Length: 296
Image 1 (cartoon, helix red, strand yellow):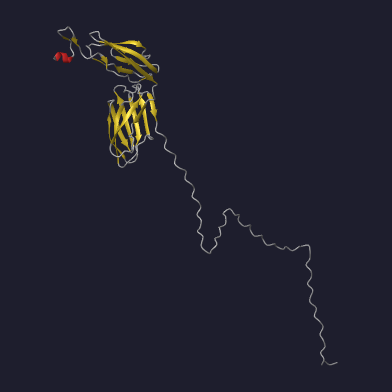
Image 2 (cartoon, rainbow, N blue to C red; image 1 turned 90 degrees about the vertical axis):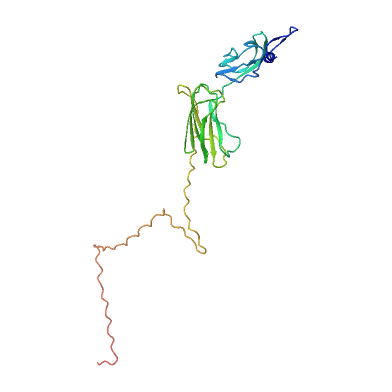
């Protein structure tokens, strides 16, 4: 009975046999593949009696992908949806078939981005840094200018374990990452612990990254946007003397008024040397009038 519970074949009086669980594929679906990116997906089988074999029974695998043992491996070269049937067999020559569809999509742009919380940051929170379409990336640098009052308490490696260095200068966090092997698409490469002094909403308007391969070749980058230009300063308006009640204010003379013309010099009379001066005529003395009492 113990052996029967394990699934081994047991002889019975009637010649019937008790068997293991039925042979079956336990891989229900295949992960999405990307054109130009290395792909690998295991095919798991259970039941029956090992060892197992898996073969392509019908259909077509994506160009660049092959079936090796119980794994689909390779680098897809063409996008599309590929449907095929796989067959597995065990040591007892039992077999089972299953149909699969493998979708090959266009490879998205290589990027490293933080996975921001949906709401506001109210307490210490770990923010994942995720990598998309890593291709042949082996190193990355992240620069993030954080909001005022947000403190970085820790940065640690995540699923893609490797080398990690980080520093904070002012409000700017810099993280350098090195990978032992190329991480898978969508992998968390680091966790950034942030602690706000007050409720704050995170954003990536001041976020930048660069990614390089094993030779140092730049694969992708996103630069920090240029800081906004300062607003022009308006020239101050001329001061105006406040009006006094009952007093009229006379505007000062314009500085552009031309100066008054100089006064004309008085005319100088010059005697004519050719014309003799008129002689002076003495005033005649009137004759005396005889008095009434005078002698003969």
